[in-house]
Amino acid sequence: MDNFTVVDIKTGFEMLPYTAIQMAAYENIYVETLKRKEAIDLTFDKDSHSYKLNGVVIPSVTQILQKVGISDFSMVPADRLESARKFGSAVHLACELFDKGTLDECALDSNLWPYLDAWVSFKKEYALEFISIEKPITSVIYRVAGTPDRIAKSDKRRRLAVLLNEEGTYKVTEYKDKNDWQIFIAALSVTNWKERQNG
Image (cartoon, rainbow, N blue to C red):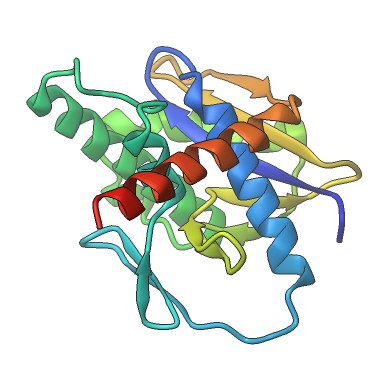
């Protein structure tokens, strides 16, 4: 299937610039996955947020963007960043469980409902059929991995970032710039060069 949509769920006040590059990486890694014929062993440790390809630790897409400063949260106080990370993870989990039909709605924190409502509205309006939900993928060529939030069937290839908010509404941003992938490759090259220099 050459055409598919990468969907990324975001929470917060605005879409961050690095999202386009992150999603371009997922898009191109997924294309490689579709073409791959040989079996690989990819494991993901949720606690350490680390990936192993055939037993060897490899960086994530997010880590690459952080290492070169494209994704930089150093100006955000650590406690605020951790709070936002935990809340974002909770929203992601609620959406994942909902999509898999395993969400216990009675146990859902009331603060999460507006975000889930926004997600449900997005799904209804866009009518996407998901073929992958929170499934780790990797590039054997570039030795990098990541976990796109969703991959959906599509009549054309798209990258959609969905910003959910506390009002229960959402905003969709579509990324089309083909240069986003080249920026990621440049970031990966810089990261690999720095690691070689540091031995």
